[in-house]
Image 1 (cartoon, one colour):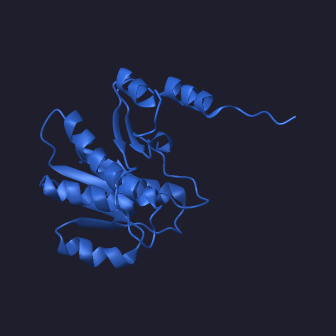
Image 2: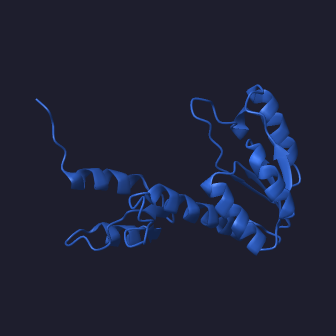
Length: 178
């Protein structure tokens, strides 16, 4: 027999797994009548950003992922700055999708020098024109070579923002570096 789990049970399990003080961005349905979920978020001191009421592009009105990515990129920079013990002077962004681009905008707004690690040659000149150092990564290189290039780029960084992902490939995790 198929088992149906009520929607609320899933929310309860999710809420139990959320650490105190977490930042959450998503379609949180703040106007849902009778739901205790927003009060539960407050009790856990979560910072929540609900995207339900955003005006999204008419040609793609359901693309919340792009909106969440833009907010996540800016929040990542703000969170990193808040954790620095000295004013940050240099940042490295690994990956230049929606999150990387939003992070760069926020870093430049904060007047922090940037190095951007990209795989798309098309971005190199535009990033250099904005005063950024650019490290061009080659997708065809073995993972350990890509990791080495990134490791060298981040050695003197105060902040590192990474959102790089290539479909069907292992991400260059820091814990894998020797």
